[in-house]
Image (cartoon, rainbow, N blue to C red; front, side, top):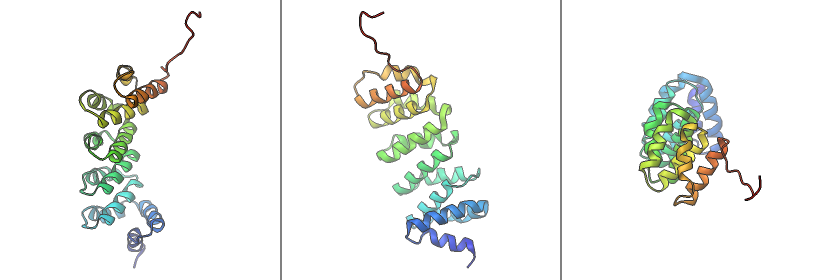
Length: 194
């Protein structure tokens, strides 16, 4: 059995520590691993799909992004969550539509991870997040506001101001946080002082 096959077997050994070590070593092997991981993304077993996604997260190759986007559409929630987390480490404007969909989905952890990935993309995602903030309801608005606050984008400043003292304490919190990060936090003064 060669090293590649041994490491692939370790990924699905059921021992997380061995799996993490194998994922790291496989990622270091580079493109030779990609065909195997791509096959695993289509496997029936969720464990194989999850570990393939986890390994891809550690790789630095242009071929990784489409595979992670594929994993973000997986039928299993844990694989989608792993893919969203991985996309934070591989920020690309190409991922924006899929991440926006995840941001507006039912699972709050997936939405939070998608928001983090959108924040990592930065300026290219600002307009789309502003659109979610304007048109969406509930938790999706909160995650869009949080992502905008993390970005420190001057383009989001008006939306951050508009959210202050609104109908949600959490939106207010993230609006304040975003303004603080932009250096436009509230300045308090004593009435009558000069």
